[in-house]
Length: 103
Image (cartoon, rainbow, N blue to C red):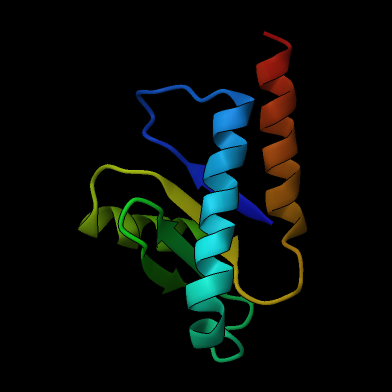
């Protein structure tokens, strides 16, 4: 499961959000998975999609903040490292999507 953090000043369509998520997952699978697993299993990675730079931390928020220190702007995909899903993150994403559709 992943979360994306676009520039807060822009809004994304569902299609743009899906494309961003897919790009981040592709970067993870093709370039980062073999580097990060299993050493950083159950930690979080923030991937700066535009540069393919990344940061690893104990929480999704810490990973995002570390990446924003290096890249103030740009699109991020944040995900838990390893095969175990992050159910809390999935619930927050779904709630956000549902809230966006009821407006």
